[in-house]
Length: 295
Ligand code: ATP
Image 1 (cartoon, protein in one colour):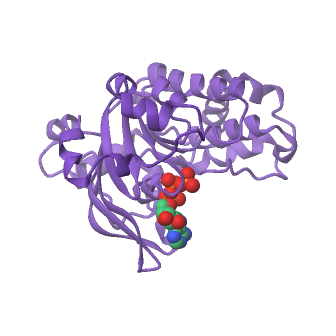
Image 2 (spheres, helix red, strand yellow):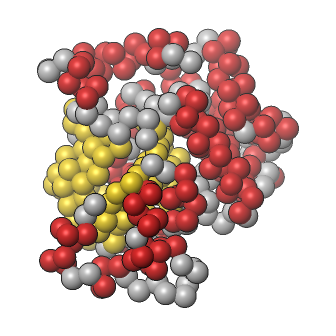
Image 3 (cartoon, protein in one colour):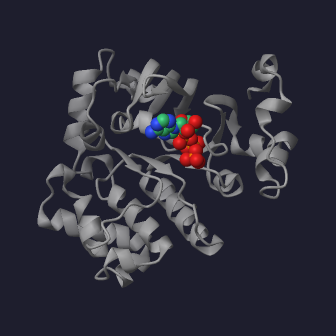
């Protein structure tokens, strides 16, 4: 599909025209999504992000790695403007989409602009069928019946299993199928950037493989960019182009996935046998060494 064919093309152009003072060329040159020095507080007191900076280039898969509580979900929710529902708030720094600040935009406006979030825990409407769940994600651009069924067919091509169980109640499908439904529902809005939270959580390796292969195809064939949070660093680094490692709300390391996979410290802390050695990366590298660690 070309950019022209996308139903939300007009919305995106409107965004670019109304948000871009320096012209399309400058907008196209920068990353699709960028966080600069982002700090997040929950309940006005609890610090979750401490100056996070990262970029998602157009057409890239960026993996956000880190242990429980590192700040991965918070980073995704900051980028999709969903922190408010959790009494969280960006108190410093800036988040931009195509070079323009997203501050003040409602979450649904971001979806219209092509940013979709798949929340952790594969949320589905369990009483609705798989197909009804998918359809719910497609209404954001007010599609015609033909556009809606074409969008459904694209999802079924990516995740053939969903076609087989399309009339089943989502609540009775497997964990892997529910994760595919959650991703498929986000894809129905025809996003160019998907914020994907822990897609592998609780799933068997073969299902994780199926889901990540779907992500790879969406990226390579349809040009969809991803910022994906994962505790399963081995899988994430296999499929992503760039990796960003978070610890206690800080970026402690970033680089291409080839570089990260080749580092002995990353292998030790993130790619080793799970649970055998989970001491924090940050404890092994004094804070003043962080600059030297940055790739
Ligand atoms: P996990 O893999 O367990 O989801 P994570 O890396 O996604 O971890 P976050 O969920 O972003 O981490 O949490 C970052 C920090 O913010 C943690 O200290 C967490 O306890 C805190 N936190 C997260 N959500 C809230 C909330 N709604 N209210 C208060 N504190 C929160």
